Length: 113
Image (cartoon, rainbow, N blue to C red; front, side):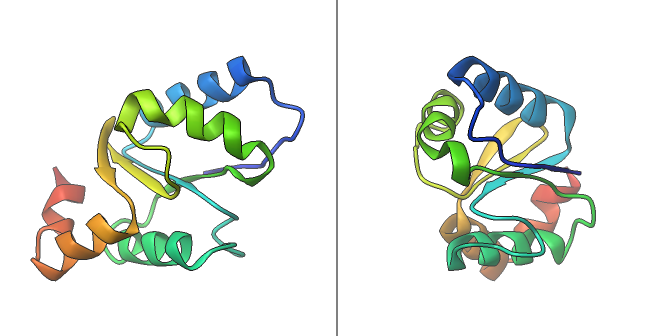
């Protein structure tokens, strides 16, 4: 599942999309770009780490409404950085935290939870 960006999205629409994506998907990744064309190395790394263990990763391209997504994600994660990964509605982290979990052998278990 992938949501296309929309520069015409209002802050309320972005908040609704964030809520829906986090709630309705086992694994959700808010990233810069799309799975086929990630637009930053951190987003590419986060997606690759997740896809090692989870085939169905819902992605949202935040680029065209970046500031609105940062604001909408902050209450869920305490961060405004992108990418952000969520598993079963819980914030897991960005690419750095995903990489650390993977290095410790904990990422696969986190995704299977």
